Image (cartoon, rainbow, N blue to C red; front, side, top):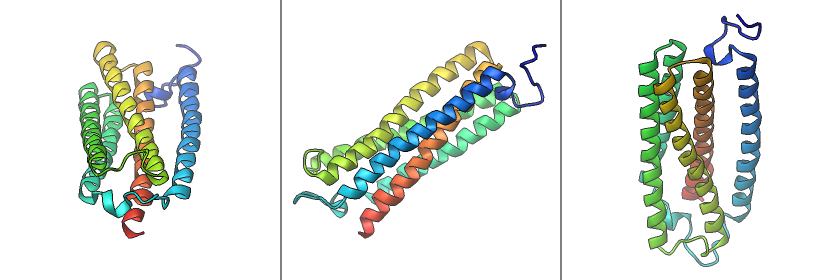
Length: 201
C-alpha cells in the first residue's frame, strides 16, 4: 500500500492528492467569499438609489422567496445526507440524495427565473436604477453559481454510476458538497439583507 494512503481517514481524505485538492478548494471558496462580499458591499451602497423606479416594496414577492429559501435550505440538508451515505459506503443512497439535492436546486432556479420575469413585467430591469442593477447582479451571480453547481453535480453522479465510490469520486463528491453548502450560506445572507431588510426598510 502507498505511503500516501491513510485508510483511517474518510475516503475523500485518504490520499495526499485528495487532501491537497480539498485544501485548494477551501482556498477557492475564500476567493468566492471576497466576490460575494464585494457584491453585497455594492448593493449596500446602492440599495436606496431608486431613480424614480420601483422600490423593494413594489417588487418583492415574499411568499415566493420563502418557498425558494425552503427549497435551497432543504437541498443543503439532503446534500448532507448524501455525504453521510458516502461515509457509510452506500453508493445507491449517495446517488439518490445527490439527485434529490439537485432537483431541489432546479426547483429553486425555476422559481428565481419566474421571479425575474415578474420584475421585468413590472418595469424593474437592470437599466431602471442603480438599486435594481446591484439587485440583479447579486442575485444573478448567485443563480449562475447554482446553475454551475447543478451541472457539475450531474457530471459527478454520472461518474459515480460509471466508476463507483473510489477515493477520487469521493473527493469530487465531498467538494461539490462544500460548494453547495457555501451557496446556501450565501442565500441566507441574500434572504436576510436583500429581501427581509427590503421589506422593513
